[in-house]
Image 1 (cartoon, one colour):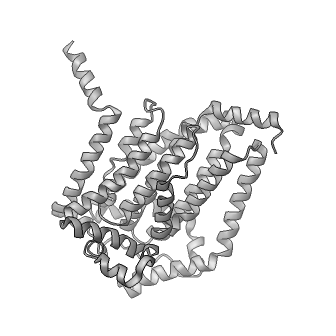
Image 2: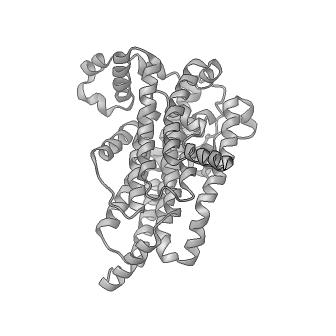
Image 3: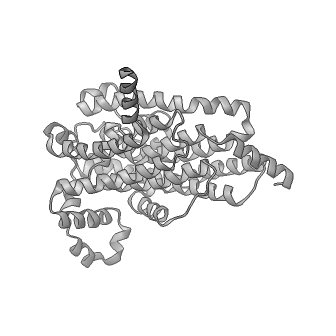
Length: 390
């Protein structure tokens, strides 16, 4: 009897609601660890944090007016500087922005309808990963982007749960923040929201839907081809700033990987996975952070495979029901990974940091296609056939 009571107490302690409460406390504790523990503080030191904390919001507004809200750095400086000016203590400012990111994560977790399914606790536990929490618990761009991605991820989960994708104030704010702070993510978010809204408004047969998906994929490839020179020049400028202009001395900066025109595209097949993965085995010697992230990556890979296994079993059985979500997710994740490739290929430390921004949305897409409502989409297909859809 006593053993049963202990088991029940453990189950209650690790209930879904309690885990979210523990996540709240965990994020605050991580802020203190980052701020006061010298080893962690040294590993996660960033040159732009003081620039945000000690910015003068009145001076920024006097110089740029409302145009500052269209500049990625000045927008973050304005809000972080305002909060710091109000609270006066750095640690409190970090906690505020850690909780901003937490709010986005919480919105996503609460949007999941079937909280007793076998994947839900995995989703919660994935938000506890140290590298994700470290970078999203600092007053900076990552906290804004995790908040924004969390809000959008919540609506994606709602859509996959047979509910309407709401264009609320928070969604508009989130898209605005992504557009201003990290415009590299705009293609992925825009395509995802556009496709979802089209699916809600227009009834298509699965053949017409397949045609549209192929057209979207082809148009994306054409766009990349048309803007290849601009992309290549942008990457060349990034390399120049890192190796020539700024004379970077970061311990984890890799040697130059782009030398000739279009190397960015020619070497994508092996450099893009590297930019997403982060530190290689040989780079784990750089610091404890790199070693811990390498272990995290192995765990994450296993979790993603576990999340997707049911989906692949379903897609082979009923292709016309599940294929569209696979292709949409693949296109969106592809764009997110290209953005990660541009930012993270030259430095595994930067790859870890920037991956924080896309982590939630990639996880949501993997989860959503796995937990797709089979009945709903069979009904849609039946309705399309009865109404003589395109």
